[in-house]
Image (cartoon, rainbow, N blue to C red; front, side):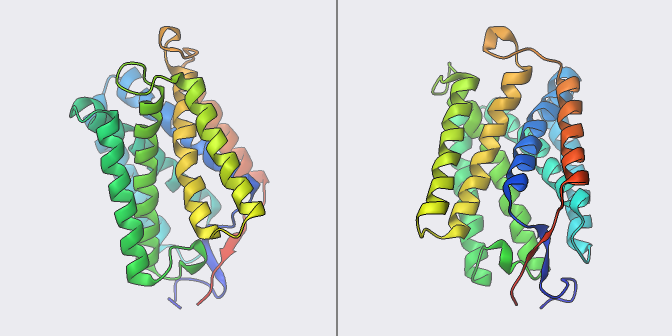
Amino acid sequence: MNQHVEAGLGKVPEVTLWFWIIKIAATTLGETAGDAVTMSMNLGYLRGTAIFTLVFIAAVAAQITARKFHPFLYWFVIVATTTVGTTLADLFDRSLGIGYLGGTTILFVLLMATLGLWHRSLGSVSINAITSRKAEMFYWATIMFSQTLGTALGDWMADSKTGLGLGYEGGALVFAAGLALVAATYFWTNVSHTLLFWAAFILTRPLGATLGDFLDKPQTSGGLALSRYVASAVLAFVIVACVAFVPQRPARVSA
């Protein structure tokens, strides 16, 4: 086992109900915070992506070089992936003219390719097998692509002009139903828990994206038109409170 991983303990949190609650809050924050920088501050998708990419690189470097699990650092990296995922997906879909469906397709292919390369290189994509820095890099690359994919997918489902037109509430309900199906499969079938983990991880991002859009988009577009700054501050407070007061245990790893 790589020396930077403590015996039997990994550097990612144990997957519990609270893990998923914090994850959904983090993905929703990524949407509102990303929109706050690119839209409310008028910095645009390119400059917003550049800013959040630098934050993400610094955060993931600190996470990978850390020798043990640090809850606040881990969730900070997750939030960093959701914000850069939001602005990057919007850059692809809107500024570069690829469109929601085109962006979704490209990002899905990249995500599947990353998972496939990870499995081929190390033999497992389970969080219980993250025992080296190489595995950690695959883990964060997978999360990065899944977060970006989730934004594009959520927009495609909700948008009435170039997407399926389900609206933010309709899109959120579809993704919530998908998560419920994954949960039922987890409890009542023998389907691989690793496969179900990544399915749930991917689905929580578009759920958070549609919830974030529902909170801050104009009422004429189907949103509540809440302040992006206020929504982001409230979500950040919720995440910090959960991480501070809910026990965060590292997942156990096998050599």
